[in-house]
Image (cartoon, rainbow, N blue to C red):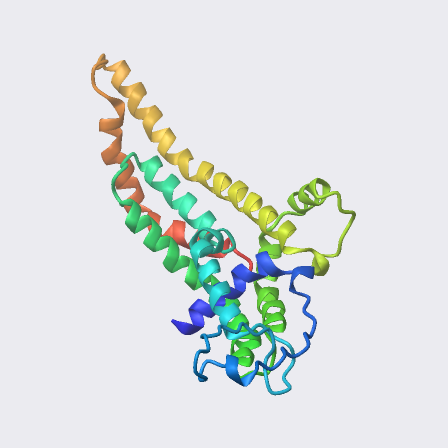
Length: 268
């Protein structure tokens, strides 16, 4: 859990802290307090010191207090942002389309749809998480790199994953909105990559949803036409078509086809 939480923090911090905001400069040592003002002296008051240095001659780094504050802030926004930076968006939208196309609005339930989406997301993102852990998390815990270096190394695999799924037209669209000229893929900031990735994921998910709907729409059309030709105007076509759609979905092993298509649609 510690490794997974660290990976999520790196992904979030890469969005909020990437760029010039992470530039750090060494600060001079704080002046020594007089002996009478130390916490252990009589009449002295307790002091809270927040340090921005690694201590004992280490490279300047975020202190423990700042790291804890940063961790708590990022975990607050973690679920909503990390979901948009992984394969979860496309998966959960397509699974929702499958349920709607079948015509059963409560089976499977939302909890099952989200749970399956999370499982598939971790399955697809496992190589990316492994790279983040090897290149950033483990060296950071071993104190071989600073927080800034860990953020830069950890965000690179996630950035590469998003760029592989993102359309060039979406990247150019957000570059134009940001009034930025042509930029190399390796130099694109996360504020351009993330929204372009989300736009591409939404487009791909709706395209896959359209293909999912086609066979079920044909069944609805055939059932409605048959009922009208038989003069059964008061019989709801959806009620009659539901068993046929379920039968078709089971016969072709629909869940396996949907999951396979989702997994193979990502380039890792």
